[in-house]
Length: 552
Image 1 (spheres, one colour):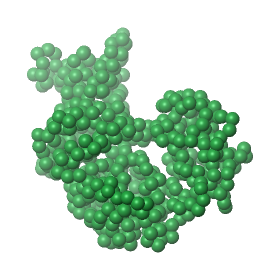
Image 2: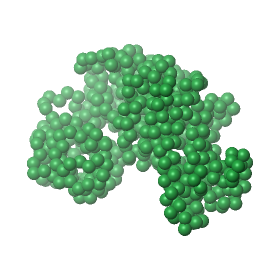
Image 3: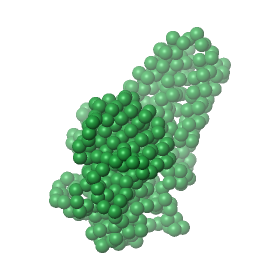
Image 4: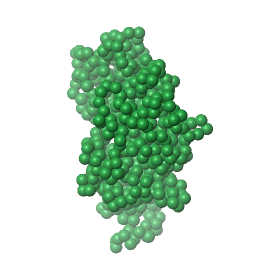
């Protein structure tokens, strides 16, 4: 058990340094800046206590009392406004904190207000989903409480609280140096907390989280996706994922048969179906079906949606269907109106099944958000993928299953132009430092703004940067005078771009087109009747993101 607790603690630490901490980061900075040395510890104590207790019991407690599943989250947001008000009007704070005076023989001001603030944060903090948190959530949803589950949740919460405590203390020390501001500083922090609460209400932070990418994913894989962690978590759940095990045992180039796909069971409501009537795998027999386990506040899930939208658009007329199984991670995600609104906001147009009781999740023995199960026309699972990434492989599998069933597959794919090219083309090319290959030019400075210069020449399929760029793990962000060159061999060249701005396209030194970028999606930069060898140059306006090239 000690090994599992260490894994849970480490997973919590990774969560605290991931993009998921962004919604609460301004609040813990502001909260720590407005009290004595004890206040940061009170804030973290409140966060650990509320996160541990309500992650385990919130859904069951609210259901038993017949209360709305998002009640606690709404109360927490209201408490953030109350804390902001007490900082703005200190007399109100003194009056409200008197009931918490029993917590200390000294003035209750720091501990009382700090603890209330921490309790609020524990209810609005939405960590990035990983195997540890998935296991805790599933066991809680199934009301399978044990001492091991409670201790694992506590270890996770303590791990997450550690880095946040350091941030809070750091904010406090900065504030002490600015103490001359006095009341003005305190009121400014009150405004920060209030604005953060407003941002949480309108999910404004998701845009920033999505743009930052999953820079903590590799850390998570080294902690939660190890064989030791998987075995310990599977033992706690009472079993592992059968499809994942079958995938490991399979070999050969043809997509393996991983077993019969379980039917959708225990679904409380359907969205985006005709009359919101139930769907079933039996009714979808004859189609290639991608079952996507997701939840609307999971930033990892949100970052996969542009790829799902591209596949749905490209292949639905060829017999491809997506069914999103929305299995909630937190109590407020059980609410139908919340899921309906989020689906519209996130442009999820395919059928969505609300799996509030984890019945379908359990039928698939699923362990992750997001998780993709690709089912062939006879109802057999043929490909699985957990988490983000490997989009090209999943699309190749979609195309293969469509072709296997005799469907007419579009020559141009959403991210891979052709599943079986007749001649050698430039391989898929990633632009972030994690998976970059065939790169030539100035040394890459990871996650820093730096100036690059083209080399004198590029070899076959090599790429290079020029001007100022910020090269992240999965994307390159144009800063100033940013250009990119690629020596390609293909008929068609596609690039995944994001952000807002313009990209000028030159082929062999001649301007060919201008692309207006307004969203994260695939853009065509070269299109011709036959394959060719050429030098592609893209000139970026500041703020445009480039993720990867694919070829056809």
